Amino acid sequence: MRLSRENVDLARANRCMTVTALAEAYGVSRTRMNMILNQREVTPLCVGRLAKALGVDVTEIIEQ
Image 1 (cartoon, rainbow, N blue to C red):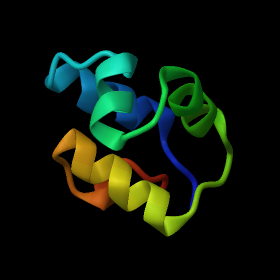
Image 2: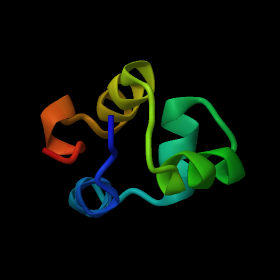
Image 3: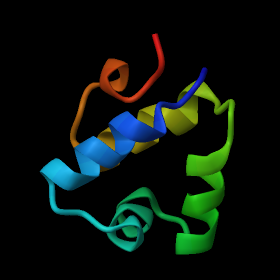
Image 4: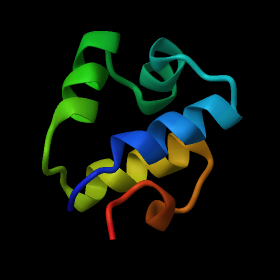
């Protein structure tokens, strides 16, 4: 699955959430979160965990 960095950033902005806060909600370090956000492909599990941490539907943060 391809993660839409722009949509993730929009979801973070809507929740006034920093990358550090997202990393804490996801359960990883800020450095690891940046690595995840910069990857071209991520696993469905990763997308699901990100969506849950952001409080959005999975379809809102993936490229269609």
